[in-house]
Amino acid sequence: MAEAAGAERMRFAEREGSCWSGEFPILRLSVPDARRATRRLLPHLGFTGDQEAATVIVSELMTNAVLHARRSGPSLTLRLAVREDGALVIDVADNDGDSEPRPCGLPEAASEGGRGLFLIEALGATVTWESTDGSHKHVRALLQGGAPSHGRRGRPDRLR
Image 1 (cartoon, helix red, strand yellow):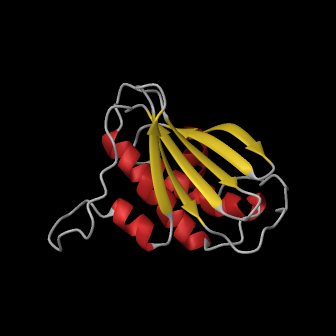
Image 2 (cartoon, one colour; image 1 turned 30 degrees about the horizontal axis):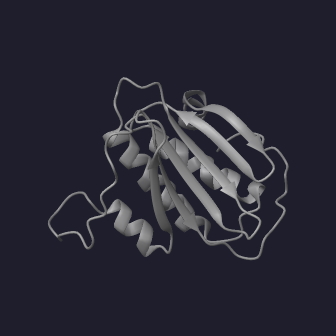
Image 3 (cartoon, rainbow, N blue to C red; image 1 turned 90 degrees about the horizontal axis):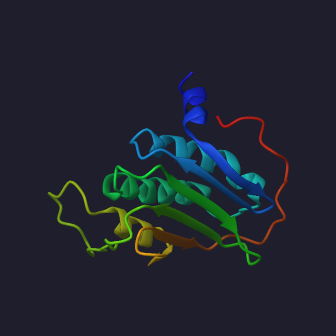
């Protein structure tokens, strides 16, 4: 039942070959929805690398976007793309083009936050970001994959 509700909250923008994007409301509930979508879609996109690491990275980037995006915006956009070399590009766009992600190195043991970008890099991904027009920000993680695959290219029945 919760999975069906998650699929209703998410709007599909694009799914073609080795690329997919979807829009999510700026709500905490979007984070598990994005994780489920990622787990379901990565095999179909042809990503042969560490799918659990990719799912954690999506979770961290989406959490940061939910926490820091302006609530006045319509949604967050998650884009997953597998490059020809098999690497996965995870792109999360929000409506806060003014603030920049601040990796803080090794977080203090007692701190409750500040681990997201550190964890993403510890999982082997490279993190970059850009402000597109002052009103939107894209935070991207590049995670190397295994041998390139052409994916199954079959459309998933439903997100589970």
